[in-house]
Amino acid sequence: MVDHAPGSPWSWYAAEDGWVEGCWRAVSALRTARQRDADAVQTFADFAELERRLAAQGPLSRARLKRLRGRAHPPMPYRLALLAR
Image (cartoon, rainbow, N blue to C red; front, top):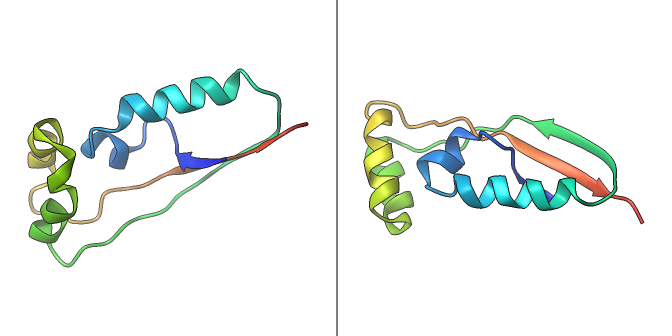
């Protein structure tokens, strides 16, 4: 299983934070053999490109993106989980 880590700034700006939290709650109910977090950054040429990338995420995402004005590289931590049999 690979998804954004809980608390991921990227998932918050994309207004997917509730979905990500729910995903990892579901995974925590399963047996996992191993979990590991990894840091990543998605880069954009400028803030306008970032806005275009998240335009379809809706009004909440657009409102949250205002905090990133002037920056175009939000942190994107991931969590990887190996599910046990």
